[in-house]
Image (cartoon, rainbow, N blue to C red; front, side, top):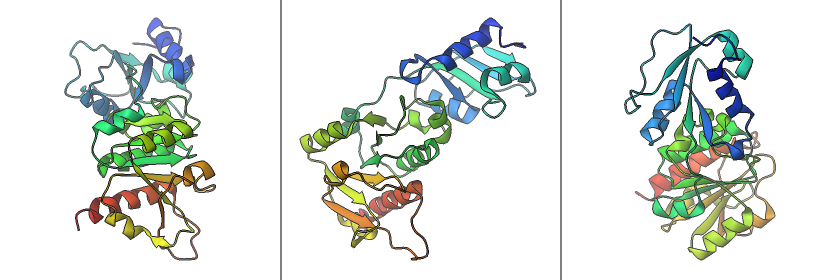
Length: 259
């Protein structure tokens, strides 16, 4: 039982939390669902921590029987995470190697590019949609994230950052990548004349670029787009949430290519 943040096992967690995300070799994975997703994708937890108020917790299939499970008190957990950020179950696990743009070439499906989207909740929701609707991966431009293994993003994606490549990239690197591999870039924009349903008629693989709800596509990335599409909507509504718009685009791509 870990009853204090000064316990050696708690200090290890504190060390991980203090390490800048870009430098972390060990990550925190909250909640059994996310731990199960990580394990399913080949991540092996070093240790699992369980709130002392919970009954026995069954580790997900695939987790090593040798993985130690530690009980931790609410007081110790609060000292580590704070009241709002503590989880009743969490694991420490080795950080997987960062995904690269080249990794996207080894997977089927379109590429989702988020241009200036910074909220972890939106990025996580889009990652879930990308996985559910068969995208090859997600590229983040100007996301303000130092690592895609950010604890907030792991939680927001429900662990699916382990299942689909999420790549941090500079805009110039993305531009060189799509040109080098002949990937057609299409964008979403409120002012576009073509309706989004037309995106399903594009037969080649595409990179779907979506900007932030407030700023839209940046000039540099927008100039890469061969076509731009808009989602018809009631004029009383200014815009869709970026995660909703991206999910609609991916759905149109998936269904349009089967018509």
